[in-house]
Image (cartoon, rainbow, N blue to C red; front, side):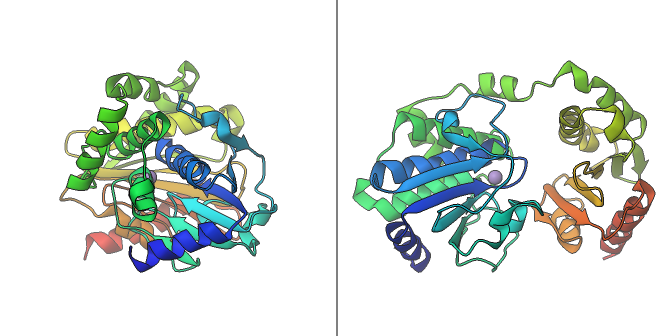
Length: 333
Ligand SMILES: [Mn+2]
């Protein structure tokens, strides 16, 4: 066992109350990896209290999803160990009003993103395909001969891996990913086509958002972008904006002929001075992780993002200008 895994084992053994959390707007990998951590600890350390907290439930059915405690705010509780999965630091989990941000508890990170933070006590990140894959390999390492699959672990692993690799399309898919997936699939197969179909569905109520985002689309060279303005949050539901933005960034931006990459800017309605920027790219073109990093965020070569926090209110034009300035710099490198 390497140093990191030994350390994680000690943290778990020492803890009584363990809190598991993940990034804001949790995706399938975030939920899967949180529930995997809880499952492994529940089975192998039955005397520990493990609680998984999130601000929403998954919109798709996954095993043990009702083990997620939905909260409005992350307050400090009796946890003596916080395990963050699928995110590099607590800042990506909490919003400003969350007391957990300043928790005195030990904090360990199990992640797979290429953006690192040395803020916390321990980081386990072998740059795997997904946090789900990392969590399973990590517990394999820690548990040794005691490691066992269950129906739930097998399914959660497949959900996390297949969604974060886009069904094995992305380069983050490694031989280890296939090996693990084969074991999980053999143990309890999930139907990938059915899941893709279910998770890619969009509510009809987001159609106006999608239409407007397409109308606003700007193409400059091989880059495309569009945006959600402040005023939009008055006329559209927050969830419809989120669904519309996700649909356009995943299915439109880099799929226009002549375009290889791009981004969407979105006003954050609940934080009046903040804006999200999500980038999408194609192999061999713009490295969007570098641009996101320079803006203070991070992610992967093909998908990255950042929340820009301004001290005062900005218009979409001002935000666009800031983002394009950083982009221009990277394009001339
Ligand atoms: Mn992930």
